[in-house]
Image 1 (cartoon, rainbow, N blue to C red):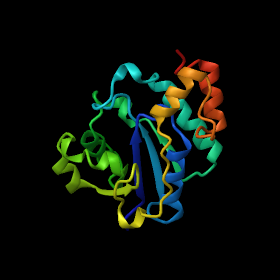
Image 2: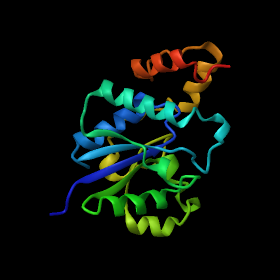
Image 3: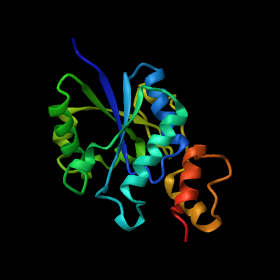
Length: 191
């Protein structure tokens, strides 16, 4: 038996938004994976740590968002908390493959992120270890099976900017209600 197929959507989730959730749901609904794990990164090596909300807050927001979606095939994953910083994808994959040898892992990434792949730590080894599912973002090319995936341009950066300047998330509802409420209560991203 080949075991479960798990797609890993890895990110800072600073904050998690409806775009992340729509792509994750698309993958399971299309049968491209049995589960999608949203892997919260404590420190992405390409991002400024000063701009990140605390890890526990970002993980809590992912859990709230997934509760709101209500699909048991989508799971929050805090595995990178136990690994050295910064969070290199190759280390996460090696760790998860040892922990779950029966699982076939795939990395789910936006086309903008995929273009950066040659800059990733040990990227050639990573490409040998796992398959990539690339979803369309910012006009980039997607994997054939992801070409019809929902595309959201509302990035976490724009959401944080709107929250910092107006105290409100973008008007089109890019944040799940529970996440927006968590941000308000905990005064995240405010000036």
